Length: 154
Image 1 (cartoon, one colour):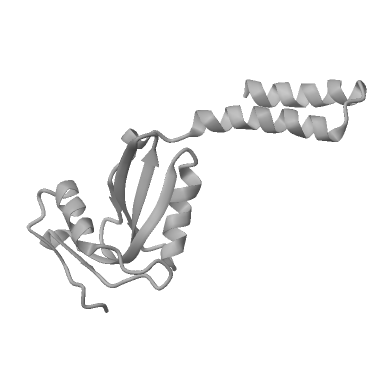
Image 2 (image 1 turned 120 degrees about the vertical axis):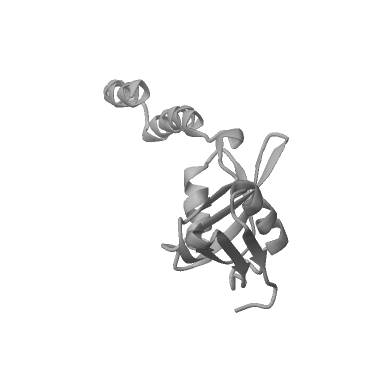
């Protein structure tokens, strides 16, 4: 809030004093970087697994890094028409992290049966290592009794 105010006041002041547009852009970009650094995600605060509560949906396996810390994350949602939609959504919300998509697939989530089934692949990103996804899902859902995968495809 304070930075935005300083920019608008600064633009009026600088424009009146004859500073050129390129100099204004440099000032704006410098202030924007300060604002963005405050919004950067902390890798430690990001949950390893975030998936829909039930249904069949696409998922991606994401490697996230910050400094010397690394985490493998599972993200899966029914709103994602493409695996890239899910990855790009996560990427847009986590600007301070180095990210790469390790592949994708589908998850069938049946909470009544305490079941998660991982299978399939992403045309754009390739097949995720479902064994890794299952390990992470088992850690996130210790009360589930049926968490499995298949590498057979669809």
